[in-house]
Amino acid sequence: MNAAEVDAAILVGGKGTRLRPLTLSAPKPMLPTAGLPFLTHLLSRIADAGVKHVVLGTSYKAEVFEKEFGDGSALGLDIEYVFEEQPRGTGGGIANVASKLRYDTALIFNGDVLSGCDLNALLSSHEERQADVSLHLVRVGDPRAFGCVPTDSDGGVTAFLEKTQDPPTDQINAGCYVFNRDVIDRIPTGREVSVEREVFPGLLSDGLKVCGYVDATYWRDMGTPEDFVRGSADLVRGIAPSPALKGHRGEQLVHDGASIGPGALIIGGSVVGRGAEIGPGVRLDGAVIFDGAHVEAGAVIERSIIGFGARIGPRALIRDGVIGDGANIGARCELLRGARVWPGVTIPDVGIRYSTDV
Ligand code: GTP
Image (cartoon, protein in one colour):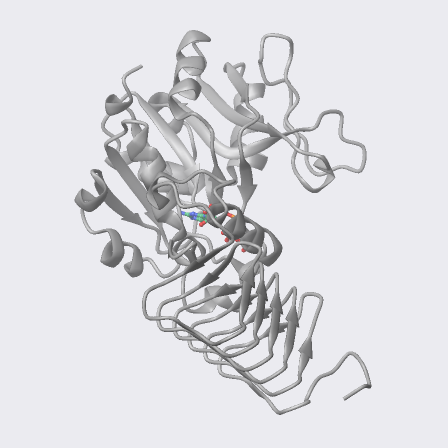
């Protein structure tokens, strides 16, 4: 199948609640990841595969996508946008792009997945098996947190299972599908529809041919702070593939206009954004520092995200935390284990501690 005669549609309309407060100011697919809007990594992979026409299915903070990507020509793509006034869910989002599709086959993507799946191999598998729909499936160590997708010996999907404590397979839905155009037209319109819970099970019960394509490439859903931090570090280290990074590989990625004080240690795939200031003796390990943030002398930031323009005071410790845009964390504060600080909030010096040795 010629990828230039396949549409790509990307669902980017979700509110990204699990990544709040970062997603209060930007939709999840636009959060800076290894220095680029997350979606740039996915779009560059789509362009690399030879696909030309892309439709973005927007809803939440829709306007920022067109502002960033325009007509797509900078990426060698032809990008169009559709808008859902009311978010229609992952299935409704697919139905909503239908009017813009040009070809008989569409690749559909969740806009928050970092993956190395070979899109041309996925398309070939779809064509060879004469499937109505094909799903990219990945094997994960602990499938209990995901919907499972068992397949038969020919790769035919036999069921779509909700999260269960006793999963019969380690194969999960990887959030990337090939749909024949006529199948998209079967999705109900005008109401919220889940592709995972409603559309896929319905296709099986209607006897359509739904196939799984399993591979062992890199895969991560970036929906939680923990996964966002890990995915970002994997991009920096070259473990996660992205044609947009042009082969960057290293322990750190420090952007133009950032300043780094003497004795600062930046490791673990950390990213320092444009104009950020990292003070003397700071330790960043797997940290994601957005543009314009300040991290003052001796602070330690591990596996955490520091929002745009936030300030982290001297000798503060942030571990597995998310600090909102413009928040101000006082000296020697300790924020650990999933702490989230909302944008603009100030925590005074020594305001929160997990230990008493101040
Ligand atoms: P959470 O609120 O944290 O679950 O995030 P989310 O809203 O992004 O939901 P989820 O991770 O399940 O969404 C997977 C992908 O589908 C993401 O790229 C979303 O942007 C997208 N998406 C989710 N809901 C909708 C919707 O109603 N319409 C459109 N167009 N896209 C959606």
